[in-house]
Length: 91
Image (cartoon, rainbow, N blue to C red; front, side, top):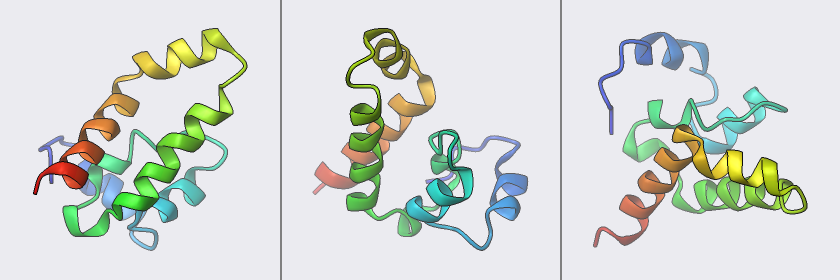
């Protein structure tokens, strides 16, 4: 599931010891892991970990409507939702 961005090889090197959704989330904490999750290969993405990360992001902004709106408009977050949908419902 490589999307062909030029920065992917350097991003993969940056997170080479954490090539999983949870590994990237831990490495990026407290910042958002969503810009880096698309750099993972399909077999490196655990769909349940991705679901957990997406849900947690929504829970984190639950009381702040402005933050929730910003999250839902974030292209990286939305890309991760599309990846989740593909992996979860493709069969």
